[in-house]
Length: 564
Image (cartoon, rainbow, N blue to C red):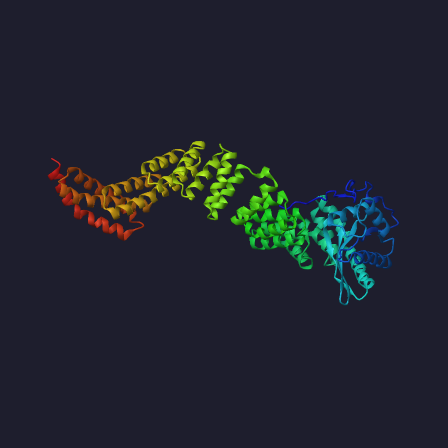
């Protein structure tokens, strides 16, 4: 299912473009802190369209939190420590950090928790939206109540109080986390429940409780806890992941898909997360739901080879062929190594699916030059030629595809279809038999023969020529041999009846023994096959079976008279 992503050290170039630095974790463990002070919490610069406001809001929250707490309970990382760490690593101390960098910075300054937030200037004052994150796992956080006030310090004071409240769950969460890590899942549940009794909306602790339930194979409990978290915090990634997995376990695809959409929306800038969501949607058989996510992702990350490749596959699976054509063309422009034989085959198929046979032919021709011995390319080349109406070149190409891979059923189907369109009846029969010998699907081969027989029967009805009905009989007998069917049986009987009827009249006119015998044999063949065909066409079969005895005396008389 979903992966747990690590925070990779992010490199950043200095203004000179020469120095490459990264935020690195210090080796000293958190336990090395003085026992006389509490945990450290870091308040970095907040997101804001006003750079100064983001800096000032962070400092205001630090000041308010220091006023509201005792250093023995909580240490607020000083602004100077944060600035020094950022500057020494080549980061601006006045810009808000991306999530991964904020986690790395918190670890650098030994802060087990840090704030993530944004501040805006409103017509009536200031508004701060934030969440408390635990440095151990940047996806686990507690969304804090939105703070609004006329003065920035007052709004910061509200945030400080919310931080204090949110931290009440951390002791129980640590106990729960440690028990889960040690496989003590029932103990983890007990620790989590104890902590939730004093803080029912504790989402960091709630996520740990859901993890314990998940390990205990209790999907209903996981869903109950995770849905509660989701209601309070729709962007809570751990809860959404566990919900998606639990709904999958219960085969509730509809709810799972809705959760996956929310999961992608929780952090749309997280490429890895959205990629995982897209993969899960495709795996669940709903690639069409992944299409808008991929489009947004590509728009925000233009030219990314990995994203283009993923989008190419998603659009093909979603049958958005025109979109796949555009993305595929861009993909091989960005990364020429992606122009494989499989790519060209898929691209040609996409053009065919959008009724652009000429474009498909051009792609197939390009592929033939690059991969002249690839069996798949040979097949698509033949298919594109057939769709473009180039029947003789298509037949030649299809024969090459059959020779390239005699076990490829699709090659036989295509060759037979082309030969049928060219009225090469003997070649068509030979191809169908060869396909059967080499393991092609007999049902599909039978349908091709059935169509050819049906077409010949219709032609005979118009021409009244015995030869056309006899051609129909050949195809219909082959169809029935490949896979018996009421359709083949009925048409075979009807064709044979038509031969008998026409031959009876002609035998009398020409006083022909051969025609008389042809009529007798044809009526016999009709009598054998029409009853089985009557299972699907009862009225028509009954009518023909009733008519046969009316011809029998005349046929017997003709044989007696003309065959001496």
